[in-house]
Image (spheres, rainbow, N blue to C red):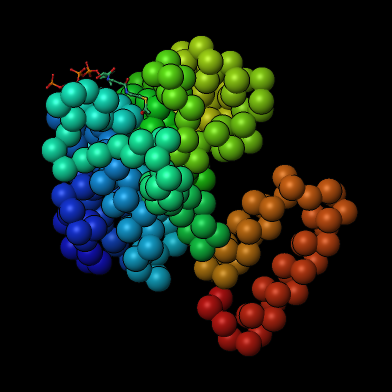
Length: 264
Ligand code: ACO
């Protein structure tokens, strides 16, 4: 999959994903525009496979959707009698359900890894699982036509693709509860106010804005970027004193690695 721009990701299935790797930047594209990038379990497993086999030189991952929508969420045909050929949803009451869902969640969780910084480029709708995928990224850049919605509760589901913690971390419990239970659409301007978007740009400028941001994010060397992300990511769980101690430890470890001629 490395160095083959636009090629389908080597995920062992026709997952509706494309992976482009260009030096330190990987771009994952949801590629079912005719279905507004509606997602299936194969697609989520495909995302997990991309995370598992990401080339080591990759330091930034951009997640985007082909066509007018980022993603319309789960492929709703999975809930219909006809279903989607080759795709199944596990029965939540079956013994294998937790393991099945854990593998799907892996497709989202790797985007938080400290060795990469992930950026969602969101144009149009990011609904349900699509919103959760945007939340799986460290940063979100929204086109001005973006619409976010945690639609799951309207379908009698809890959001279960690892999106609830980032949502609560970003907007706080009261607003997260309001967004999930009302299942209302959040436009780009409100998303910016709620800190669900780092940047809102005209739709035509989305790719350029994301490329500039990624270039800037790659300014520090790899070891410094990784140590900094790890330090910041641990901050919410620590007291001020614990975080100060973590800074001391991280600085010593980083400089030790640098002097030893590590990956800095
Ligand atoms: N699952 C399956 N097919 C879908 C989905 C979906 N989630 N979303 C869109 N499509 C299909 C449509 O059926 C349509 O197919 P067709 O051309 O064969 O009729 C095609 O994609 C284009 O969709 P339109 O509705 O025509 O596109 P439009 O731009 O007008 O609207 C929108 C886009 C708002 C995303 C609309 O399609 C929609 O509301 N989709 C359903 C969203 C949803 O409820 N998702 C579930 C979220 S909950 C979760 O993810 C767990």
